[in-house]
Length: 98
Image 1: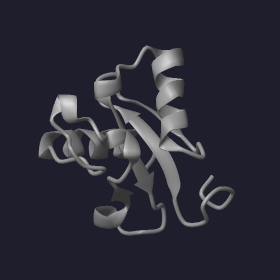
Image 2: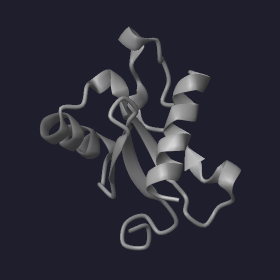
Image 3: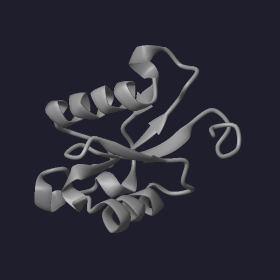
Image 4: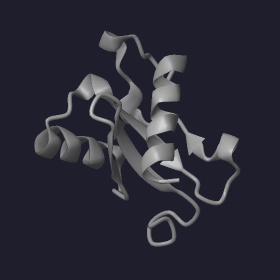
């Protein structure tokens, strides 16, 4: 998927409550819509990441997306500020992808 889209990475949206992902969209927002409309995901539970399949384990996931801007839920940046949320995302990616 990475080679077809952005070369060395693929975009993904991760629902940390349902432990599901949408992968390969052009925009994280497209994947977020897919999860909310088709899977009943809640916006506050969906986080955008980039996955670099060829990088080492500690560098494989990049927490950077416009959908991560959630000031009402305490996240005021494109990153994922909460360590617990980042850990949940990493575990879901490991379980479903890696």
